[in-house]
Length: 340
Image 1: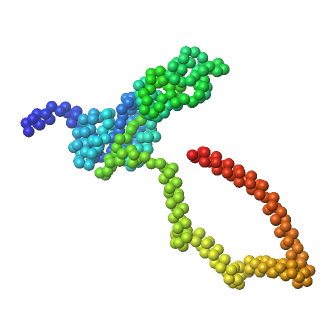
Image 2: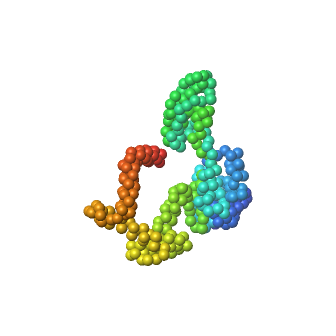
Image 3: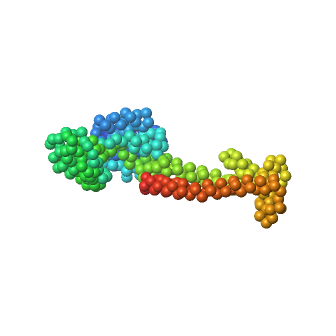
């Protein structure tokens, strides 16, 4: 006991105050997170802090003090210790975890890669002209593995080339040339390691949301729900109009097929009867020309002429249809290539 008291007495007051401040912030905000800040210059970190001032509080402290504050803030909060990075800051906010993650990701900016750093992804130099005039830079680019040449008085990159694969270490020469070509493979920003809210800890793999996919899924779900409601004749504010239109159409078809004499159906029924009469007259006339009078013969002749014109037009149509089908197939192939 005497040893513990003796040890505590030698903790500087500023460290005690720092721990108490972190504990107070944890209690004051519904959400806090641990952020990796390794490699971020102090000037840029200060700029990020200013950008976040209306949304969140960014607190930079020593890892030992952060661990002590977490240990003294309850069992649930203690679990956040596992997410402390080499260089860690704390962020406190009223935003929900998903908004916070999205905000921090959007705040990241491209940055040049340093010599000796590991490529975070394949680094590709695209084919094309540069703004550099002929000179020593040509040999510098070639020495960095970039296929450069002189063309029409300027330095050009002859072909697209992957100059460093993901996981490879970038050389001094390549790092310098990438910076001069304004190719920035790195991203500088605040990396959210974990977020604590109401006893739950959220990690980045949970917080990554593909908004376009979720929107598409919601749209498909709404369409399926609408179709199910209509097919099951389940009235809602969204489907009642469609259900009434469907009921009217179906009742009209029943009336026509059952030959129900209603004012709204009489025009269709008369047209149907006339069509059936012409069919009977056509069969009768083909068996016996005297079976129909001259007036009906004229009507049948006009109908036959119209049918012949339609048939001729239909016979000429397939050529255009084939062209349209080829165009459609070509368009679908293009879409397939676009979307993979």
